[in-house]
Image (tube, rainbow, N blue to C red; front, side, top):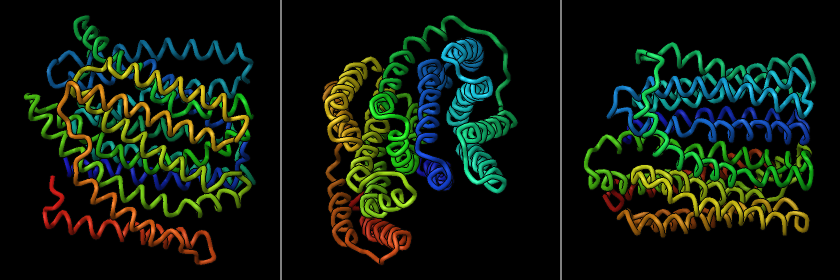
Length: 455
């Protein structure tokens, strides 16, 4: 798991670095209104992807090793769904009077986004982390290159160019994945396999959709109540943090589930999952501490380009992202191993409703900070409910005592480095971030060597 996690970590951290570059390009060259609309489009594409197809990917991942008919059923079902979705999306976009070029771009992005997630999931399933690494790198490099070329010719980036660049990245990644596809394909649907997918995957799909909605309902609420420009101010900060901290947390999750599911005995799966829990905290805490330390500089840099945010908003979004990661990569992974996916419904639904209510009450009164607070509170409630429901049926130690070492190390590091100010926001961010990681990683490595923390 550790070796694969490294590759998945690289497959997340390199795209995250490239994402920083992309977001910086948008920060410097795209107005907040266009970025707000772009964010809503990509968010909606992602939500449609989950609602329509997550049940197929979840079923494929869960049953690939136990039934030879899984891959053919998965491919056939996915292609049929994509055709239906593309037709419906085209009709809806025409009805709401989106121009033809934007309609074509959005529909083709939707198709390629779904296939990219499917192919990415396939290479996770057959445990090929290097292929996932290259697929993600290609996607992000060929997303950023058209933006740079466009900037070389013109003075700014508009919505259509952002959509086109995003599409080029997806297409390139899909071509790479298809070149290395291994399984022979026979386009047929096995009804028994499809029934398994539905029984196992639909509850997960609903829960994942609720999770994505919970993660992004703030953006819809801000756009509806305050406008696309204000959503751009919030979304750029959110996307910057989410594309780094959450993605790094996801690296271990990507590596763990396929390997844990290979163990036939439930007790062995639980034992491996307990190791995974501690490893996830070891990876996540230094990143969390680093982001907390540099939150004032991040806010200043965003503001210097005309976007409007505050250190408080950045800090709450950082905490929100960490709590969201725990929701997805601890509780979500545990539920998939349990095959008790229906228990996600209530916590997710309660959290979404709570988020909506809090935003309706607070957003018009205290502004964008309410969106971050609402998201944080809602994910904490969801995590609490999931914990109660899971531990009743599954003896997992979600809070090993050794994480207190990590928390203490992180807290001391924050106290030592938070007030550093070198007069230049970029230099201060670099030095503070480096010191924060160094002050945490060194003692953690020593604790591992002395077997005080062991996996």
